[in-house]
Image (cartoon, rainbow, N blue to C red; front, side, top):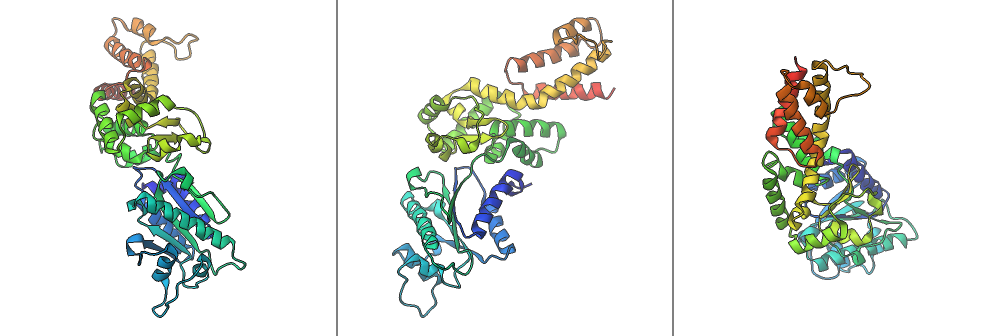
Length: 385
């Protein structure tokens, strides 16, 4: 499964697609770490599939160095044309102008040029709104820019302009789907890898892939890898500590549309995420860079609990039956009571080992890969006999 096939990402793409087909220009702001080139290509293909004359223009191929209006005219003009247009509506009225034109390469540009092209989108939308007669077709411009574009330079949504932010997807469940498809071939390893990678990564697909290398290692190794990732993304320890002070290490339930604008700069750096499962929370690499090891331990336990807790419940039921305790008895024994009942039986060792694993998780301490491997092997053995 590819990123663009995930339901939440597909819904995002459909919203962009509908805006473009309705003649609205679109600016998409994405934080670093999102590799979505296939998604943008898919949107272009879907536009053509729906009968829209869609094209793309790389800024490196744009001729000239004058006003952007004249440069775009130079790109589309006929060989014999000599006089550039005086306003944007002249380009909108040209029958050969693409119905949806994607401006590519803005992620390689400096901030000044990104700001200028954000203004181009605004001018284009204003020209479209001011036309007495509609042009022959949608006539949409669209572009993908880094989310670090200063908020004061982000255009406002209007009749013919929409700003979309890459925010609130994929969900953590969808990220697990991706991890499962790309995980190890061994079933036990795959279970562990998909839960730990996705559980730590939140909504960051690139982080989930990077963590696959270390999910079988110690907690300290995972912390070091997250710290390296923070350094690669340019997050200093001072910045991470400041973000921690503002937000904290705990997740907060909130809808992505209600994110305070004061938090946009943190999201724009890729350091803030939101998922339906966990709400609003800082990127785990921020916690590692800021030295919040207890916060990271809680994240790891959270990832492990969704995998391990159901197994513990099943093992508890099996051992209870093996020890002659009625399944529907009014007082179901806790693990401590179960261990007492198991003394002197063939299950004494297993009950104590599983009880230790359960208590480790209950006290918010992460388990190791060998502990899970033992637990899974025991469960298979007990369930199969």
